[in-house]
Amino acid sequence: MEVINRWIIVEEGPNPSTDYFVIPYLKNLGVSVKRLTFTDLPSVDELDGAQVIFVRYVSHAWQSLIQQNLKKVSGVSVFLDDDLFDWSAFSGMPLRYQIKILRYSWSKQRWLKAIGAKLLVSTPFLQRKYRHLSPQLLSAEPLDLGAKRPLSIFYHGSASHSEDINWLYPIIRQVLEENQNLDFEIIGDKRVNRLFRGVPRVQVIHPMKWTTYLSMIQRSGRSIGLAPLLDRPFNRARSHTKFFDITQAGAVGIYAEGDIYGRIVRHQENGILLPMQPLAWVESILQLAADDVLREKLLRGAQECL
Image (tube, rainbow, N blue to C red; front, side, top):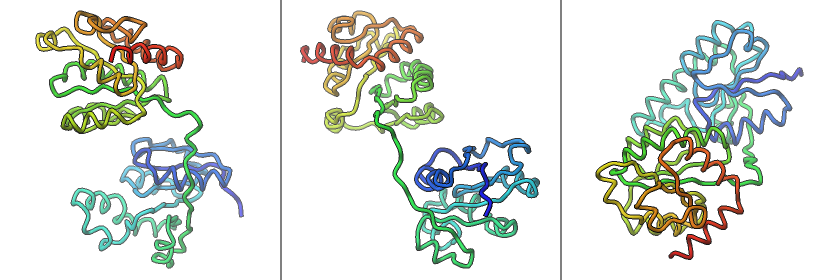
């Protein structure tokens, strides 16, 4: 049987279904793979001769595109790792999730069958249930995350720090774009979650009680803590306690220059002091992330202050 060498994965966005099942399957086939989202519609030339795999969902735009170019694609498949074709299986789910499944999965069954799409599934249960469609069973494989673990940057501020968070947003976006081995953790509400929604490798943690926070920062894994401070009336009365939070988290801090953090931070000895200039913060975060020796030196200096 001829193996198609060009495959297009269509997914809502990066997800575990693709990473655990579909990527290993195609890797074992030794084929060329391109991952596209619902909004990344390829040209007709890119579709020509390609095999297309929908992961869980089929958007209307992609359905129209494939329908118009059925004679050009080599084949269409859909991968399921949940029972998305049986209404009774997901009828007890939250309404919003039901609507999503109905719109992008359940309602596409007739069309997928009409175009002769192949069904790929994740479990023997699904394989047995849909045996009339001759599904192929894919095996999950562990992710290849590489030997180097990502460094975690964090900013832990309350709702009163909203202006500082807005100031920090483009800095974090640029830093994460330039260094794929960094991630970012921030405490925030729904507004903060919306702000960072489009930025990869960002975790927004819901606000918590003080005792819970103290327990959280004692867990290892954080490397660089940020403490920006815009010159605003409310900020002028703040203290330097974030120095203690960052240090107790086992991280090195980058702090806003001025009287507040200048009381305890000695630049390049127990932390980094910077003017509130975005470019300076971007460059300092990237340099500090790349310098293991400097981070260890600054952390030792900070820990001596506790």
